[in-house]
Length: 337
Image: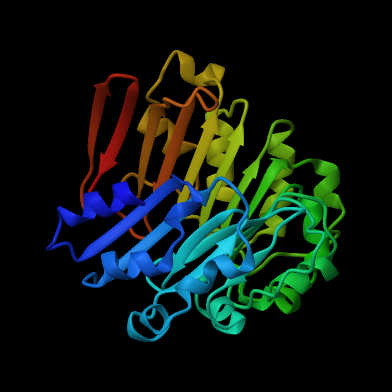
């Protein structure tokens, strides 16, 4: 704490401070921070402490200076103490041993600040229900009842699950999770998984992020029916031919943007890295001369060797220009307005 006091004493005109540090417990002292932060307009921090705190360790942050004068509220979650404010929504991870303490009423915390929750494990202790979470990321097998005890599903806008069959927990979407429009499925989607949903359609989903490794052409046909209103589509695959890419663009009638991450280029692109524009148009009923942009780039991330991006304009562009760029590991083809 002495080093922090010495450092900030050299910045008398400082008005805004943001800290993200791994610290010793001596830095968790609200009284000493009152002196240092008295002239600050904004103070945001996240301190990862080395040892577990006690409930009364937050008492020094419960004074009128923090709660009434500055309206700075503090949360302690999984050995991390951090400030809360509306302009910087908080995301938290839930583990088996998760617990938390607040410096103000729990309802206010839940309603104003917690924006994203990642459920890593099912907690042993009861977790207070977070009522304004917008992003829910589920990374374990968990019952619908347990999820409902932790979050208000009617507030969720982006849902992320491990397997497509995990979505069975939430059917029908329009009643259980009515405001969700973005969906991420982490593990590879298979034919048998999709078949379990029978005739159900996810009509409210506009953004879809999935992983495909086998039978893409067959699975796409099922996805076109299951997700009829997709505007933004992202998927990972071992490889993907030009024909399949055009097939998915034509199959999602509302599609505006598609991003495909592949590990290796397909055979039909190795000899011709930049496909002929006329060949693409001839094989698609949606793509016209002036209504799409196409890009290929080699990624720095070795897990995804290439990124292939498509942008489809609702109306034809006025003019087009094809530019080939080479910069380091990036190869790009642009067709621009």
